[in-house]
Image (cartoon, rainbow, N blue to C red; front, top):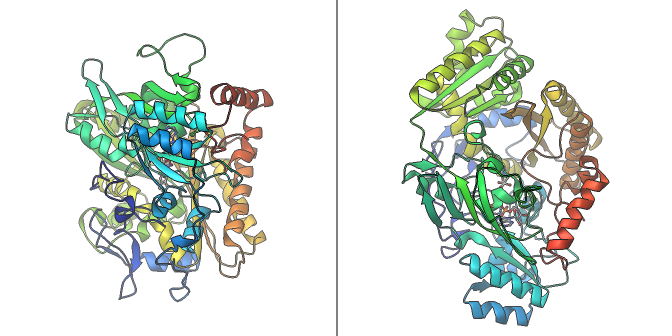
Length: 588
Ligand SMILES: Cc1cc2nc3c(=O)[nH]c(=O)nc-3n(C[C@H](O)[C@H](O)[C@H](O)COP(=O)(O)OP(=O)(O)OC[C@H]3O[C@@H](n4cnc5c(N)ncnc54)[C@H](O)[C@@H]3O)c2cc1C
C-alpha cells in the first residue's frame, strides 16, 4: 500500500487540514456513493483509491439492510463557539511559556485532541457535538527535557496532564473525565519525532515517542532497517501510544509484539524519570519495571524515548492464502502451525461472513483485485468441489525472511494446511487481503452515512476455546440485537488475527442499521457489553491489544483479583500521588 508520510510536523501543517476531524483518516479518502449509484473509494493515496466497488452497495443492502435514500450524514462543519471556555492556570502557563514550548488553546486544536475513535466519540462529532469536558490547552514538548519541565510545572500548579500520540485509541482513553475541575493540558507528543540514534552493531534504535508509525518505518527503511511493528493503525498511531497501550502488530510472529521489541524506555512521572540504567536483552532484577510502563495508558507519566530492536529489511516477502471448508478446520490448522512454531510473519483466518465481505470489496478492475471466487472457480469445481460456499473461509499469509527460509516455511505451512482440508488459493488473494487492511478502517464512516453503527473489538483466548467463543459471541450478538429492537440483519463476523503457543487473538466486527432505535449508541454499547460478557464467560480476555481505557474499566474486577487491582493502584499512588495523569483509565 502506498503510505504517504503523515508529516513529521503534523501540528504545524494543521492536523485537520490533512486528517478528518470527525471521522477516520485522510480528508480526501472515503467510501462514497458515486453518481451511478455504486460505492467508490475517493482520493489517490491507496491502491483502492479512485476505484468503484460494484458489489459493495448490494452487499450493504442485503447484509445490513441499508437503503441509499435513508441517510444520516454528518454535519459539514462544527460550531466551535459552543466549546466550553478553557480553564486556564496562570502559574502553569507562565512556567510553560518560559520553557519556549508551544501552547495552544485554539478550539479546533482542543477538539481534535479530545477524543479517540470509538463509535460513541465519532457519533457525537458527526452530530456537531462534543463532550462536556475537553482539554483546556494543548502543549507541544520538543524533547525529553521539555517533558521533565512540563511535568514538574504540572505538579507545582496541580494541572491534569493527558498525553496524546496519534489519537487512534478505541477505548475512550483520551476522553477528559467530566468531573475534572483542574486545568487539563493535553500533551501532544508528535513534535518529538526523531530517531535519536541507530546502533547497527547491536541492532537497536532510540526513538522519540511521538513518531508516527509510517514515518518511523520509512526513516528506518532508508537505512535498510525496520522494526517490523505494523499495527493496522500504523499510518496514524505513535510509538509512545503503542507502548502505552501494549500494541500488537500484524507481523508479530517474526518481529514480536511491542513488549518484545522494547529494550529500554524512559517515562517522566511526577516522582521522577522511571527507567533502567542499562540496555540489555534481559535481566533478573526483581519485577520488570517495563511492565508497568507498557499498558500504562497515560496514567503514570509520559513516555519520551524508546529503544527498540531493529532488523535488516527482509530479503524476501511472499503472500499466500489458504481456503478451508469451514472455520473449525481453519482454527485447527492455525493451531498446529502455531504449535509447530512455523507461523509466517502474519497469518489471519477470516470466517465465512468476512470472506464474503472481502468479495464485496472487489473493485471493477483486473490484476491484484481480480475476484477470489472467479479466480478460484476452476480450482473450486475440480479440486475443492464439495466445499460449501456458505461455510468456507480463508486464511491470508505473509511470509518474510530470506528466500530459502521463506520457501521452507511455505512448504511446511501448506503441508499442515492440507492435513486440515485447506488448499492454497494463491499469492494474489493473500496480497489483496493485506492491501485492504488500511482501507477497511474507512468503512465505518460510510456505514454511519446510512444509519449503520459499527465497531470492532477483540480478545485473546486459549486454543481449545477459540471456535466455541466465536460461535457463542456471534449468537449472543444476534440475541442482544433483537433485545435492543434492531429490525435489520445484524453483521457479526470475526477473524483470528494473531496466534501463540497457548492461544489466539480473535477480532470481531459488529454492525447494525439503527433506524427506529431512539439511542443507537447506547443500543450498540449494550450489544458490545453483552458480547464482552460472553467473551469473558468463554475464557477470553478483556483485550488482546486495544487496552482498557474507560470503556472496559468495568471488566477489570473480572480480569484480575482484588490484590491485582490493589497493586496497580499502589504503583499509581507512589508515582503520581496527586493524580496529575488524571485521564482515569484502567482503574478508578
Ligand atoms: C483503525 C484502527 C486500527 C487499529 N489497529 C490496531 C492494531 O492492529 N494493533 C493495536 O495494537 N492497536 C490497534 N488499534 C488501536 C490503537 O491504534 C492503538 O491503541 C495505538 O497503540 C494507539 O496509539 P496512538 O499513538 O494513537 O495513541 P493515542 O490514541 O494518542 O493514546 C492512547 C493512550 O496512550 C496514551 N499515550 C499516548 N502516547 C503516550 C506517551 N508518549 N506517553 C504516555 N502515554 C501515552 C494516551 O494517554 C492514551 O491513554 C487500532 C485502532 C484503529 C482506530
